[in-house]
Image (cartoon, rainbow, N blue to C red; front, side):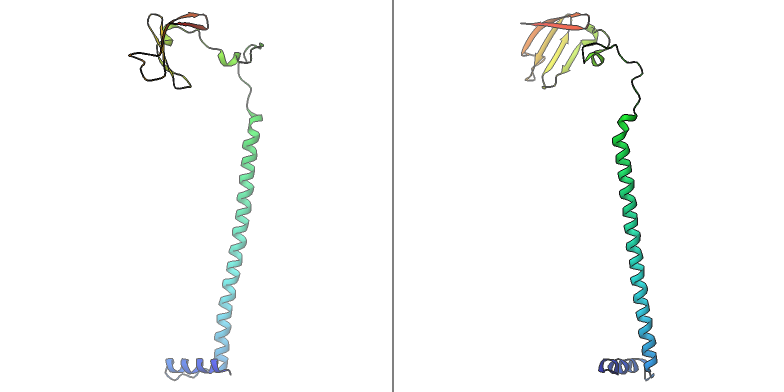
Length: 154
């Protein structure tokens, strides 16, 4: 027996009040501790395998969803009422009702943050500096001809 084992035996005897611990008791205890350590290692290995399998399944599902989402454009239905074919590529975009003075009346915001105001009877104002009601940048008149709105500014 080594000096460490001898000290361990003495310490156990001191704690247990003189109970004698034999070599076979120490071997059994050591075997039990080794067995518990091995069970933990196996459990950790199983956990690692399960985590890796779950990650592989998740990657597969995400890849399948992404592939279907990217491929979904081909599966969309064609328009229910295709417009008449013409040389104008914007014809489908511009189809709508004829403009009226009542439909235009009000303030419209343009893409460059300018404001466009249609008012009665046929007045148009354009402003970029927040003075639409007091002193707009441009004043003029407008006329509606079919689907066109023409303005003349002063």
